[in-house]
Amino acid sequence: TVAANANGNGKDGIMGSSSPSSGPVYRYDRANSQLCLCKDLLCRVVEERTSPQVAQVLCAVLSAAVPDNNRSSVKVEWMRFEAIEAKMTARFPQEGRDPQRFRSKLMTNLDLLASHKDSLLRKHIVHPASAREAQREIPEWTVEWANVRTLLMNCIKTQLVRDQFGVVGDR
Image 1 (tube, rainbow, N blue to C red):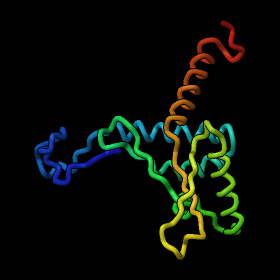
Image 2: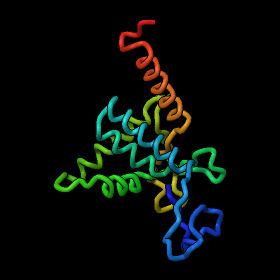
Image 3: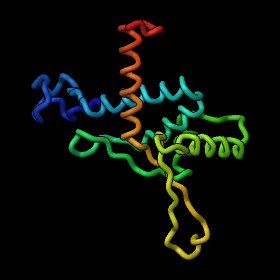
């Protein structure tokens, strides 16, 4: 979320000292910061409503969500199971656990997140073009960003009503 001017002289339109010896100059990137906050809030909501393991799986899939080129929307890539598994093991080490059981739990959690029409993930099956892999179907998942936005907006509305009128909802 923070970009640095390599030579530290502030000549690329980044505010800073004109002296090269003052070090790197940093700037604020609103789009990346806002996306990071949305990802964090989403993982917290999922953790509260389901389980920490499901939130970890969602966190791994959310790594494919980046700001679009125009910075006003989010670009989300499809991820294969192997890529999601690699992100999970890199971010949340599973030392001492059975790898086969870990893979089956990961698949179960991915299917849980993609099982409803209003789910946070979408799953589709890719049929390989090569004849050698033609028998095998490869599942891929992506974040359904419209559903994520709806969920976060509903959470905000609920929190505002709770703050304004109390838990009971005296209106």
